Length: 368
Ligand SMILES: *Cc1c(COP(=O)(O)O)cnc(C)c1O
Image 1: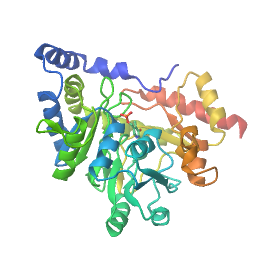
Image 2: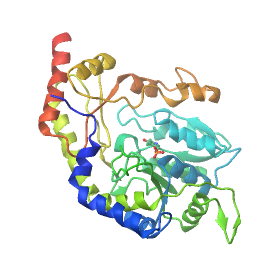
Image 3: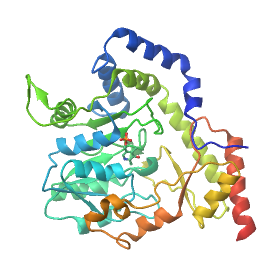
């Protein structure tokens, strides 16, 4: 048997007619940039997320960048984030001209450990940037409490957490701004690059809209911005998918429950879900011994897996100049060594999951 890590074609096949006709309507309309699909998607996504305002942008990375800038982050400031994340979280901070700071993560959720925020702040820290890794929200009450006490802005990297919830509120809508990615592999995926920034604050939202279109207002550039618009074709595709996404997330949760059941007593640790959280399972990530050996073995048995991420951000080549080094955040370094993402997507079959879980048991059963 072969188990794919992800099957984007299967999702397309399930809604092919809707997608094809939505794309065709845009092509025939002659309106390709910031037209009716973008504004309709923004309204529909805002209602789906329970937030006042959403602005479509070109990518999740840009959503973080624009969110930070709209919150006033710029050169001379620092921004505190988690060291165990996709590099683009840190890239967005650097692109604002700000300095990234890190604090260690929680061993169970892999998210920023809120109890370590205070110790990591500097005088010039302007914002906190929690990442809701894999679709499990960070502890937002703790983070918002510290931020409000210290006068910091909070921008959430919800790139992997569309549809996840923190105490009944959608991830990405708790802070001053939230950034979503619609990269094809995310829970809500476009047919190319796309992203969105959410905010309850009209001023922040207006500033994001200004910045995504070159900072142009009243015929002149009032603030140097970017070309970072969501285009009409992607917005039309996302409008179709938005109608299905709740069902897809439920299927991800069901698949996650099945894995956790199948992997009981297998020798690996399954994902933890805190009582304040509803996980959206963009990824299903286990903790395991001899990770690389297991991954190789599963690959030989036809089961594709992923590692998110093999190195904490501060140990990657491009960020060597930030002044951090090996040993600085032991839990992030451990997570990079022992985590493995198993195949998960709405269309995965229970038999495929059972096959993968069986092979994991065989791997440990034989060699423990
Ligand atoms: C995917 C991702 C991003 C970036 O999103 P893009 O749309 O690819 O720019 C940022 N942060 C995290 C945690 C991500 O997983």
